[in-house]
Image (tube, rainbow, N blue to C red; front, top):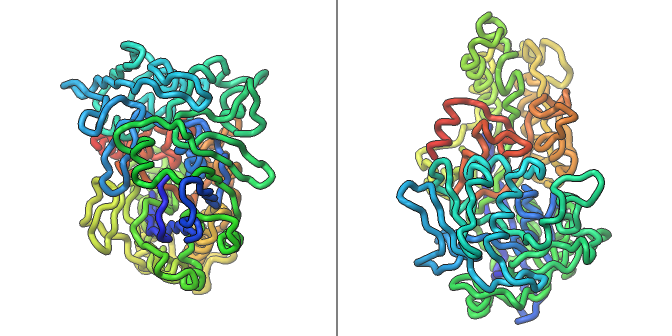
Length: 570
């Protein structure tokens, strides 16, 4: 585990189907931590719970779980850092120059050699090809229903496309070339065959993967152990009462050329002996815990840019400001009949060929007008300056992002010529008129549905906002007031992300039949959410219509042939 002496405040992005702004991840570290060497204790406070969705790699999409999972499990490949961004062999057997993986001339057949002699945390030797194939077979199995199932199956093509060549070599034969194979597939955390192969993926009579202590961390036993990986930290336990995970350093962590044990020790980056991840709700409580020495680190989602007095007291000498990889966005339900497909917009309803569904592209254009109106009504700079003390940048696109103020790319492939939508209620009104709405005839805002102060016909939208982030809740309220001022009938509902919003909007059970439904029907209209970007951002997994939730990452249900063609090219 690497940590630095300086407190860091990162600027991150907010974008989406409607681009919003770059919000501020903040990482605060107490100087007292650095008086210790070799056996330091580090306590990280997070706004969300870990374990939340789960601890098995591939079963969780939670940023909060990552703080634990990334230390316990390793993939065949890993990222060096966020500056050089090079890929390194981890469980793959190789060096930086010869990383242990290769691809043939068709760019479809990948051969990966596995590092020999790597023990699992329970002492069992050794990680091998069976573990690797078992991991990818499982994550593509419909019975497990992993969130990455559709993503991995779309790339690998199914378990039959993985071949064990020998005990330490696996071959992947892809149906088509995939440029990010190393970055987005080989980084998948490998799980132990000897622990999980007898456990059912899904069961109503026994303990399955999802409900096992291996995944939940709760009440482990010899027959149902907690997480077992190969990473630099080992599982100790989870205190349900205090919502705290405890990991301890893996002193038998294996050596590999860069980021292995010897390399970390030589650089002074393996000094933390005991690592705790604690859920503290609210920035005030987290700041108090930091000041009292109860925690050492506050994660970025506390958005400490909203507490300028604390940052001033903390001291600029302990701050480092940089463009971070955290996104805050408004996600639109693209199956919504008004703001998604556009079929029920007044402009579409006035044209028979549009209203009857035979001209979907025309209907989509009217929905685009409404989304543009929402974007024009979003005061990005006001949010950044008034709510975040200037710690943020406006965003344009996601997941490929950059800083429009400096024309620099943050993730690979960002078009530096792009600029964010400007704030303009006049342009917002024009877009609403283009979608067929009649503007209000009186000022005052659409606080009660009446023709004089609301659009005609009424445009009803509900903003669904997680309770975990105070800054996000504040800018949701600001956007609500802006939309109300131009005649939109806007409601706002705040719920805990996990389990309420996650189960409702992102992974609803089939029994509710609410995937893609509006908020009033049990789904969502517009979802406010934050997440961390991949350095090699892959829009295909988020926007292709083969990647629909709940088995894929296309949570907003984008379904457009032109869009598919573009993201497949990337």
